[in-house]
Image (tube, rainbow, N blue to C red; front, side, top):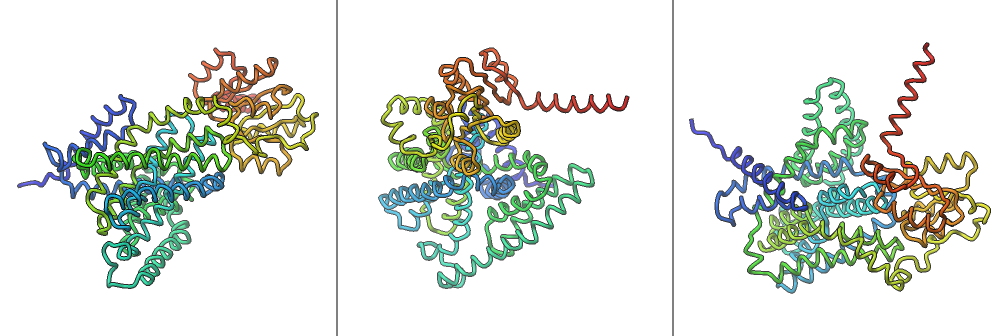
Amino acid sequence: MHHNLNLITTIAAAFGLALCLGFAAARMKLPALVGYLLAGILLGPFTPGYIADVELANQLAEIGVMLLMFGVGLHFSLDDLMEVRRIALPGAILQITVATLLGLGLALLMGWHFGAGLVFGLALSVASTVVLLRALEERGVLETVNGRIAVGWLVVEDLVMVIVLVLLPALSGWLGGKEGAGGDSLWSTLAITLGEVALFIGLMLVVGRKIFPWLLWQVARTNSRELFTLCVIAAAVGIAYGSSELFGVSFALGAFFAGMVLRESDLSHRAAQESLPLRDAFSVLFFVSVGMLFDPKVIVEQPLQVLATVLIIMVGKSAAAFVLVLALRYPLHTALTVSASLAQIGEFSFILIALGLSLGLLPPEAQSLVLAGAIISIALNPFTFKLVDPLQNWLHARGAVRSNYHRRLDPLAELPASVTSEKMTGQVVLVGYGRVGRRIGAALARRGVSYVVVEQNREMVQKLRQDGVPAVAGNAAEPEVLIQAHIARAGALVIATPDTFHVRAMIEIARALNPAIDTVVRTHSEEEANLLRKENAGAVFMGEHELAKGMSSYVLERLEQRK
């Protein structure tokens, strides 16, 4: 019997080559995603050698899209977004507008029509969530204020792109692509599309939020790991497919809402963990399939267009984000971190370009330009992050830059005049007011100990001041910030922020201004804790150690009581 081995051959070739090139990229300190895209290029029809089944790879990639968007929905937290809404919402929308206009301008210069330019610009405006999360995790800044702002910014970008994916098919005819079914008018097509989407979202939020978490709990009670994982994957793929067939929405939107409703369950963390291996595997196939569509000839035949595309991605939209963050009076380091985070494009760009091509909105070379921009920007993104601190030091060396853009006329950068000098003598300077900082602040308040909070999140500083807590907005690694917190007269410096990168600078400044000050530091790793102790950083506390001490004390105390 003859067997058709196209599926097995395609998967084996894709995984094998992706592993080799992903490993090589990681060894060169590049994101593994670069290796996956290169694997796709080598397996694609535009390079010599073995050619994988492109149509089959695209179907596998659809599953990758579903699981990627399911993961985005599963981790989407409205609370996290609301915490940074005042910077993430206006910042992301304005940055998308600027990048889209730049892309539109380039498209019009290349002779494309308005609709093609609009889709091309939108594809260049949205950064890769996958690349960003991995970059922030590698640098240990995911849980910091800067990390939360960057992630919140990308969540807004993702939500905008979800809306674009919904509206684009309805607007296709008006933008110069394929007409809507039945030749309906623009407004009727929009009304039908938005009605179907609203009905789907309503069902998911009203019915899905109750049914799917309940179903997940029932499956979890069987104590079968296989059934639990199967339930999660079936929900992701099933809802994505069902939403497409019944309501006409994209696989991406359906999977996103599948993740959102499962997040309501107490088992959402376990669902994320159990589905992660399969999600990662199919996301690799997604990036490989995207690479298969790339024609390397575009780099030789259209070098100026490729360069302009890369400059829009890495310079244009990053510069726009930089100016916007500073205009909202956030610290220079926050502006540079957000700018570096956005200096790349990824999965949503690929999804949007594929949709634009299927609707007849884009010329074929648009896909190659976006893919070239993605590969180059993702490969250079680690080096962009490495420029953050040197660039910050260079800008700080110029006092005019710092005073004009960083802290000038900023009421939150100075303690209110109503704070008495008695409260600012022997006080505790508390850096960071997250989950740990809040508990420390509450404990100090119960004992009647005065303290002043130093926090980069401006919304948090405003709320603290409304509650009567002295607080200063800024980066405690900068002397002027600690001076505003009256570090010279403080009794102790408590660093409760998870950002250990600037700990040494904070301690150095504090001891230079107040040699007798006690310092207390929070850290996450054993290695970092040992280094800080060797450098005489004061009292160093590690979460796991303190948790173990607390649990041990409780167990021993209970056992003693029973004797």
